[in-house]
Image (cartoon, rainbow, N blue to C red):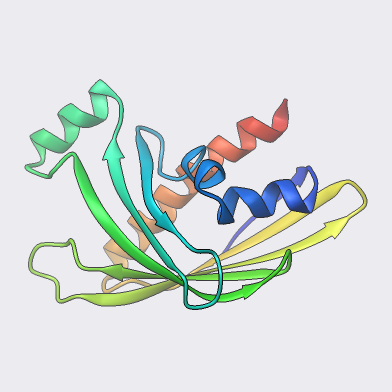
Length: 151
């Protein structure tokens, strides 16, 4: 569980999760970006994007590890309660030697005055190592929102 509180409107924070422009502006750990191909932010709606290494250092690191510098990601919005809760179900089908499976990210939003609280619950992955990597990656990408709302 990762929590953040930002001085922002709920509409602004919600749009970061539910619009192409908003999502692309912060999604992905430091050194990566998301190129959204399809986003339909309603229950059952599709989210398709490429996770792309975007800095020379990350591109080199991915190549050094023998990993592609970009991979397609398929998700769907499995729960959408306007300005309150989102659940993204991601298809994990890009890990060599690991059978395809689904993994959820749930986000609960609440407001207090001019602040928005976001509680992100990451579902465990297929191994403790990948669960920890997911948490580290998501924490890294949240730094983009931290910087955005610090201004």
